[in-house]
Image (tube, rainbow, N blue to C red; front, side, top):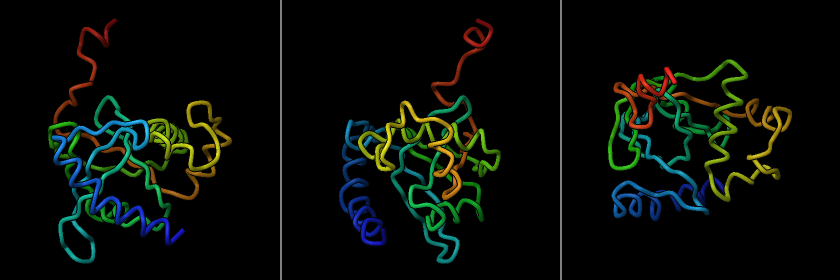
Length: 165
Protein backbone atom coordinates (compact mmCIF):
# COMPACT_ATOMS: atom_id res chain seq x y z
CA UNK A 1 0.00 0.00 0.00
CA UNK A 2 2.90 2.38 0.72
CA UNK A 3 4.32 1.81 -2.77
CA UNK A 4 0.93 2.46 -4.35
CA UNK A 5 0.59 5.64 -2.29
CA UNK A 6 4.05 6.80 -3.38
CA UNK A 7 3.34 6.01 -7.05
CA UNK A 8 0.02 7.85 -7.04
CA UNK A 9 1.59 10.82 -5.26
CA UNK A 10 4.34 10.99 -7.91
CA UNK A 11 1.69 10.69 -10.65
CA UNK A 12 -0.27 13.47 -8.99
CA UNK A 13 2.65 15.87 -8.59
CA UNK A 14 4.39 15.26 -11.91
CA UNK A 15 1.53 14.55 -14.30
CA UNK A 16 -1.94 15.29 -12.90
CA UNK A 17 -1.37 18.80 -11.53
CA UNK A 18 0.50 20.08 -14.62
CA UNK A 19 -2.06 18.46 -16.92
CA UNK A 20 -4.92 19.90 -14.90
CA UNK A 21 -3.40 23.37 -15.28
CA UNK A 22 -2.75 22.91 -19.00
CA UNK A 23 -6.37 21.89 -19.57
CA UNK A 24 -7.65 24.98 -17.81
CA UNK A 25 -8.95 23.20 -14.74
CA UNK A 26 -11.24 20.75 -16.50
CA UNK A 27 -10.38 17.11 -16.26
CA UNK A 28 -13.17 14.56 -16.28
CA UNK A 29 -12.32 11.20 -17.77
CA UNK A 30 -13.28 7.56 -17.66
CA UNK A 31 -9.91 6.63 -16.20
CA UNK A 32 -9.37 9.46 -13.70
CA UNK A 33 -12.96 10.48 -13.02
CA UNK A 34 -14.16 13.92 -11.98
CA UNK A 35 -11.30 15.91 -10.46
CA UNK A 36 -10.81 19.06 -8.43
CA UNK A 37 -7.65 20.48 -6.87
CA UNK A 38 -7.69 21.08 -3.11
CA UNK A 39 -5.45 23.89 -1.82
CA UNK A 40 -4.53 23.50 1.86
CA UNK A 41 -1.74 24.54 4.21
CA UNK A 42 0.44 21.81 5.69
CA UNK A 43 -0.28 21.42 9.40
CA UNK A 44 3.39 20.71 10.20
CA UNK A 45 5.25 22.61 7.47
CA UNK A 46 2.96 25.60 7.05
CA UNK A 47 3.61 25.26 3.30
CA UNK A 48 0.87 25.44 0.65
CA UNK A 49 -0.26 22.05 -0.65
CA UNK A 50 -2.16 21.15 -3.84
CA UNK A 51 -3.86 17.79 -4.15
CA UNK A 52 -5.94 16.58 -7.13
CA UNK A 53 -8.92 14.65 -5.79
CA UNK A 54 -12.07 13.02 -7.02
CA UNK A 55 -15.19 14.72 -5.70
CA UNK A 56 -18.95 14.62 -5.65
CA UNK A 57 -20.93 17.87 -6.10
CA UNK A 58 -23.32 18.78 -3.28
CA UNK A 59 -25.90 21.56 -3.14
CA UNK A 60 -23.46 23.68 -1.09
CA UNK A 61 -20.05 22.61 -2.42
CA UNK A 62 -18.25 19.30 -2.82
CA UNK A 63 -17.74 16.06 -0.92
CA UNK A 64 -14.25 14.53 -0.66
CA UNK A 65 -12.92 11.15 0.43
CA UNK A 66 -9.44 10.50 1.85
CA UNK A 67 -8.50 7.72 -0.55
CA UNK A 68 -5.58 6.46 1.51
CA UNK A 69 -7.57 6.18 4.68
CA UNK A 70 -6.47 7.45 8.05
CA UNK A 71 -2.93 8.14 6.78
CA UNK A 72 -4.01 10.79 4.27
CA UNK A 73 -2.10 14.00 5.02
CA UNK A 74 -4.51 16.48 3.45
CA UNK A 75 -7.30 15.19 5.71
CA UNK A 76 -5.27 16.07 8.80
CA UNK A 77 -4.49 19.46 7.28
CA UNK A 78 -8.23 20.14 6.86
CA UNK A 79 -9.01 18.93 10.36
CA UNK A 80 -6.51 21.42 11.77
CA UNK A 81 -7.25 24.27 9.34
CA UNK A 82 -10.75 23.88 7.87
CA UNK A 83 -10.46 27.05 5.76
CA UNK A 84 -9.11 26.13 2.33
CA UNK A 85 -9.81 26.61 -1.35
CA UNK A 86 -10.68 24.24 -4.16
CA UNK A 87 -10.34 24.53 -7.93
CA UNK A 88 -13.42 23.12 -9.64
CA UNK A 89 -13.58 23.55 -13.37
CA UNK A 90 -11.99 26.91 -14.10
CA UNK A 91 -12.79 28.61 -10.77
CA UNK A 92 -11.24 28.61 -7.34
CA UNK A 93 -13.72 28.65 -4.46
CA UNK A 94 -12.96 29.51 -0.84
CA UNK A 95 -14.38 26.78 1.38
CA UNK A 96 -14.90 25.68 4.95
CA UNK A 97 -14.36 21.96 5.47
CA UNK A 98 -16.36 19.81 7.86
CA UNK A 99 -15.46 16.22 8.60
CA UNK A 100 -18.52 14.03 8.16
CA UNK A 101 -18.99 12.04 11.34
CA UNK A 102 -22.61 11.00 10.80
CA UNK A 103 -22.41 7.60 9.14
CA UNK A 104 -25.23 8.12 6.61
CA UNK A 105 -23.65 11.35 5.33
CA UNK A 106 -20.19 9.77 5.13
CA UNK A 107 -21.60 6.78 3.24
CA UNK A 108 -23.41 9.06 0.76
CA UNK A 109 -20.27 11.13 0.07
CA UNK A 110 -18.06 8.03 -0.14
CA UNK A 111 -20.42 6.36 -2.60
CA UNK A 112 -20.67 9.56 -4.67
CA UNK A 113 -16.91 10.12 -4.81
CA UNK A 114 -16.28 6.51 -5.79
CA UNK A 115 -18.95 6.75 -8.52
CA UNK A 116 -17.15 9.83 -9.86
CA UNK A 117 -13.67 8.30 -9.59
CA UNK A 118 -13.69 6.59 -12.97
CA UNK A 119 -11.76 3.32 -13.03
CA UNK A 120 -10.31 4.05 -9.56
CA UNK A 121 -13.83 3.73 -8.15
CA UNK A 122 -13.55 -0.03 -8.59
CA UNK A 123 -10.43 -0.21 -6.35
CA UNK A 124 -12.37 -1.90 -3.53
CA UNK A 125 -13.49 -4.77 -5.77
CA UNK A 126 -17.10 -3.77 -6.31
CA UNK A 127 -19.03 -1.41 -8.58
CA UNK A 128 -19.67 1.84 -6.68
CA UNK A 129 -22.72 2.58 -8.84
CA UNK A 130 -24.50 -0.41 -7.30
CA UNK A 131 -22.81 -0.68 -3.90
CA UNK A 132 -24.90 -1.31 -0.82
CA UNK A 133 -24.39 0.49 2.48
CA UNK A 134 -22.90 -2.78 3.77
CA UNK A 135 -20.20 -2.59 1.08
CA UNK A 136 -19.48 1.12 1.50
CA UNK A 137 -19.55 1.02 5.32
CA UNK A 138 -16.10 -0.56 5.85
CA UNK A 139 -14.54 2.09 3.57
CA UNK A 140 -16.14 4.80 5.73
CA UNK A 141 -14.77 3.12 8.86
CA UNK A 142 -11.20 3.27 7.54
CA UNK A 143 -11.08 6.76 6.06
CA UNK A 144 -12.21 10.38 6.36
CA UNK A 145 -15.04 11.98 4.40
CA UNK A 146 -15.41 15.77 4.21
CA UNK A 147 -17.96 18.28 3.03
CA UNK A 148 -16.43 21.48 1.67
CA UNK A 149 -18.99 24.27 1.80
CA UNK A 150 -18.31 27.05 -0.70
CA UNK A 151 -18.43 30.64 0.55
CA UNK A 152 -20.67 31.36 -2.45
CA UNK A 153 -23.24 29.13 -4.14
CA UNK A 154 -21.69 26.60 -6.50
CA UNK A 155 -22.77 26.95 -10.13
CA UNK A 156 -24.66 23.65 -9.96
CA UNK A 157 -26.70 24.63 -6.86
CA UNK A 158 -30.44 24.62 -7.50
CA UNK A 159 -32.06 28.02 -7.95
CA UNK A 160 -35.17 29.05 -6.03
CA UNK A 161 -37.41 27.94 -8.93
CA UNK A 162 -35.76 24.50 -9.08
CA UNK A 163 -36.07 24.05 -5.32
CA UNK A 164 -39.75 24.97 -5.33
CA UNK A 165 -40.39 22.65 -8.25
